[in-house]
Image (cartoon, rainbow, N blue to C red):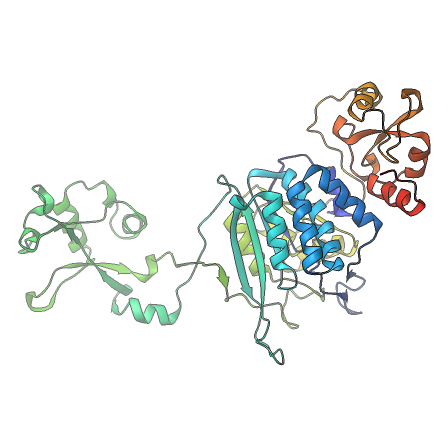
Length: 473
């Protein structure tokens, strides 16, 4: 669990190191959120209001150099919506670009948002990850409420992005009583079942086309189709007929099913014998992209900690089960009350949480102890991690000549031309903020710009130079 600016910490993580990202950032709601005094999350607060300033503009300029599609998406949002939306998207873009870098090829990102900015975030994510990596826009119905002179706003959206190699585990929920009443109408001593065909279309010359117990499928233009593979055949073998899937003969399998009372016989000889498919063997209903069965965290819920935007554990459990496997690494860069971390721990995943407030570190420890009865070894860190995936890097000062040619003798700050001797080598993102000694993070600055930059970022330097009117065209 890291306490600090997630941008700095993300810059220090190795590339392709994370299996699943769940990001629940501020929604650009123009509100300030605070946990109530006396709650477990007391002291946690954040301001979800965004205004465009020079630092935002400088970040935007850096994005323009590296990611023209991302720049265009942000710029157009500023024109269509507002400067506040533009500022919000710049904040999100620099973080999404880092999340793209740390995510494995088999990884998936879920971005939690609402209708305040979901359409703009969708375009931004298409620009960052590529539209081909879009997988889902999951709708989570929070609750029903009235919204005055319009339809009630009752849902959030989770934008999911992952490549062709992205991990996917089929997620199912138990069938409802209404579904069982409709499709599993028959009952016997084992419970509810439905009748399933034991024949298929077309005739054959082999055993599947021959008479069995007075029923000749060929006369009806059909043939025997007796399950030997699949989930139900496996259930039959495990629960009722040991070795069932090893029975090769079609009539032998039919006899085995009949002996185990797995065949529903027609009354008075009318119709065909059919297979009993029990509800107990059903895998459940596949979850679709509308989650309407997970309620928000109520004030009386056991998992409630008082955090203003707390999400239910059931929601994170579903996401983590679907898009990761035990032992995988789950990253939540806006972890708040650490629900994703608690869920990941309970499901046997490793996890990384990042939040500006130190309350998050206290909450994850407390929640694991109270709700999961676990005494996990949690490492709370306030430092900036160092990347270890760049190999042995030479002393960064050895790049001065190469950078002089790359920048064509112009300062990376004020853009003025200077002789070689007037330049000092500088880190675009300081090492104290997650920057590395890699040549891609190095530049040449004149002495004045280097001193003006100090321990800040390049974006902060550009903002200062603009304020002073010292930035050359």
